[in-house]
Length: 180
Image (cartoon, rainbow, N blue to C red; front, side, top):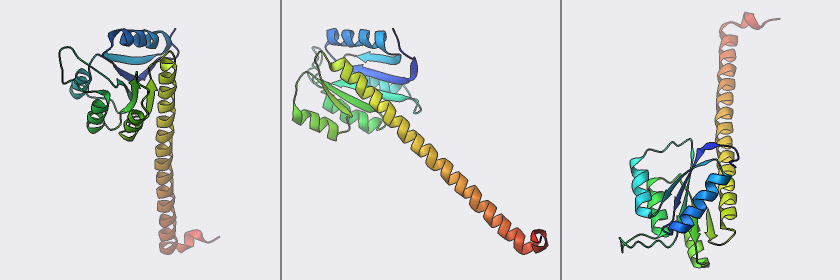
């Protein structure tokens, strides 16, 4: 059954292999509480995210199949091309590249272009995808907490400086207040 419902985690699964898409979709629904949207082409996915505003407080994770063929579109883009376009549109998106091929050059290229993980399609791919999603969430939470700490520290130091300057000014204007 679903673990904790995570409506702040949006997973976009893009794979032209409808059987594989259906298997992953069922696994997501039965074992996670993430919001899941599926697409059978990269172009449909890009069209969707261009039309729908995204909440930047939520996590957005795209799982892109590398090799996407379309019977209707001989010029369908592959996962690397979709990754590049996605990062141009929404650099904050995290991407997990999924491929049936175990190609180190392809994996390296995907990582260089901004993918967080490269997962080979096999019996362990769903587990690796979930691990990658968990890492993405943990890493993003850590970055957010560091940013919040930095802001809080800056505000505290600013208040402390303001208080110090105010006391110094008061001391010079009203020195009798500070005599014991």
